[in-house]
Amino acid sequence: MKIIKMEKPNQIEYALWNSPMGDILIAKSGDAVVRMILPAKNRKNLIKVLKEAFEGVNCVEDPSKLKNVIQELDAYFQGNRKTFTQTLAFLSGTPFQQSVWKALIEVPYGKTKTYGDIAKKVGRPKAFRAVGGANNANPIPIIIPCHRIIGSNGSLVGFGGGLDMKAKLLELERSVI
Image (cartoon, rainbow, N blue to C red; front, side, top):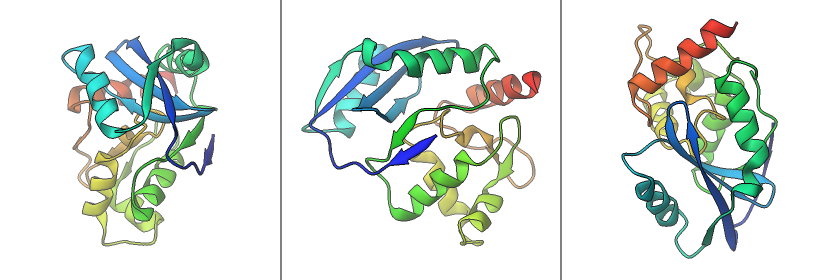
């Protein structure tokens, strides 16, 4: 997986993918995945969230541009893929948040780390709550595996797709190892 720098794009292509966890919106600009929005009650909310996040950017539905991302996600959910090869670009986030997202990518498939572990990894050992905030702001969940981060006591806490989805993702990964 590669992370590139990118200025605010003129256009973003997106696809609505019917995942085993519900509809997920995936967005790219050029060759880079820039956003994944986890299931909502209806598809229009996903598109609305995307357009609000990228106000002033032309957002175009074009599933053909996201075929290989969807193929990798399908393989992940079938238990046939443990890593992603997608290029990513962070179009949001503070330098601290971006450092957390990069650290999350290093958490191995099927393993978990605590918020404190990630805080230490990014050189801010007391910033575990800020790591939680960065996790919450993760623009590309699943590919950037914030679901692998748990509370210091081993409990499942915080996940944009809900704790049920977090538990299912962790169970999927544990069953494949």
